[in-house]
Length: 222
Image (cartoon, rainbow, N blue to C red):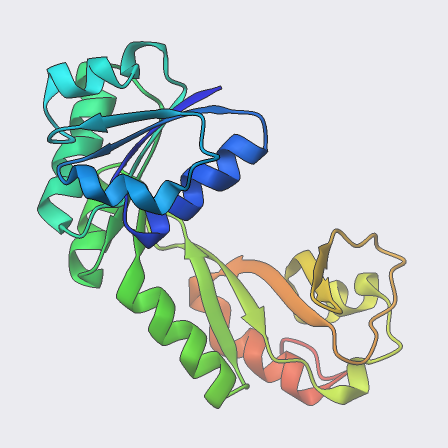
């Protein structure tokens, strides 16, 4: 797949290098030509100097043949404008924009533009390390009705099957993180010490789910 990235800061450069290593072709756009130094001499993709939401600049980067577009510059407005141009003018379906203001991120998410709210993500991750309890949302659908969250699990759940956890808490386990690696469990997978449990649930049920996970087996959703 050909992928166009707007912004050659640390995130854009790392993303470009990672995608190229996976076998994709990549073009990176930045207004500052010196920013391309972050890509390193081994980067084989295109380096395009210009404004990332300018249609001619996007064409030079190969947007017409692209399967995805990422806007990760340092400006919220530029990222959103570029994402909208890529989607609405060039018909790119896989579009994502980095947004620093979490309030804006929610608005654009509802408009159908996938966003990564940098400040919120960082704050959430810090809180997760400082206060490892309850549920920490990782993703919400645009309507806010359903969410994916990492839920703190009482130690009494260790040794229980995923099927038991799901039946007694009313959630669907999406995946586990075990020893730093994500894994897709089956109904027969047994929880081990140190497992991080990521579940899909209705947002309105979050308090009940937290309580059920905190009470351990036989606590139920009530």
